[in-house]
Image (cartoon, rainbow, N blue to C red; front, side, top):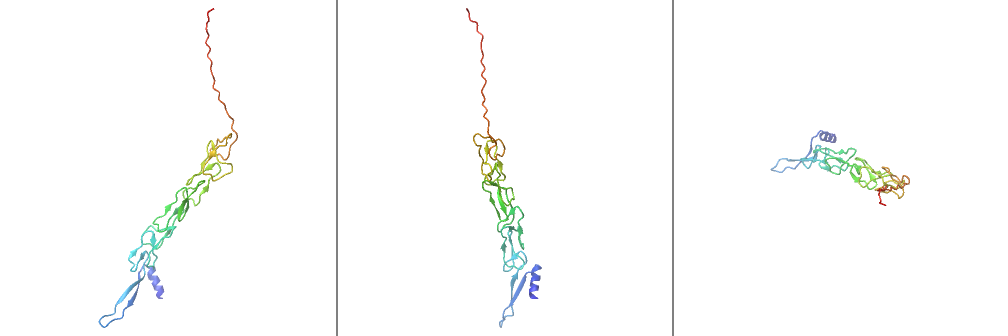
Length: 204
């Protein structure tokens, strides 16, 4: 019955005390000392006089302040618990707010890490994607980019961090060249030379 009453008082937001009687002396009456055994939600300390800061919490019935774990946050003071981050966001331990994951990074609830060369990621993506054949991606790229005219990636390869020059004697005329696109025919331009002939009268 006593434990039920304590739980009820704590749940109702009432600080619970225990009292200890001291043995009286010949010239003193009974005295009692109050001891806090549980604070209301968001309060802590030996006398429940402290309020939790943002990034922290204290559940009802506790005397201590706790830090929000990674992947959770608390924006307000005097709170009982922490909030789990939303999809596409992260938070480190003791965070007051969640932070949006940026493109070019693989995102988790506890942080983000940059994509390496040959990979890319949109904002909020949980993993980095591999660049397709004919495309490349530099480290930390938000999107893949096509290998344009005169450049290529080797046929069948993916995850390229850059493009290479088109193989000699072959054409690479597309916007995302995965290998060569056929041989090139050389065109020789010969300038036209005009000859001007003047008619001359020679005396005889």
